[in-house]
Image (cartoon, rainbow, N blue to C red; front, side, top):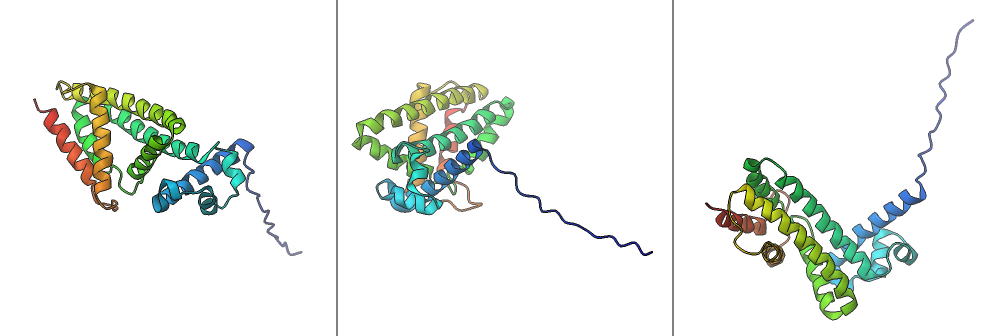
Length: 210
């Protein structure tokens, strides 16, 4: 009797996401869509209709995750800030002799292929127009400034150099300079160092000269 082996393939269904995972995925997709829309149309032109069309969702998906368009864009800005501050925190925790080089490398890639300066400028203008929005925007901005001030203190300490001014004022100046310089130039291209980052790196090296 001849033995015959029959291969049976069983289709494995993809694991269903939990409700929390589905909501997180929806928020992420909406934020990515908002980033694209504001880059093309600015804050005023970035309507909920355009964002939902970009994301492939209905308006209900936006309002079940964010209480307003302003809240959506503030969350996008917060994520930008959080990511940058986390990376800088990691850099200044390195051995002192490695910090300067790591900061230079980070600044060279700063805002390349990112719309953070554009988003921040659009939201800053909105803060001037809307007192209610301004309260949330400036609270977020202050949080970033305080985090960056702490990072700058450790950066100067690692370089054995005194801070040239109040760390909060220096943090605000560096942020304004980074955004302003980035907006003055065409969007960055892959593999091309950030011109704004190069200038800021040069200033930091001057300020930390012994």
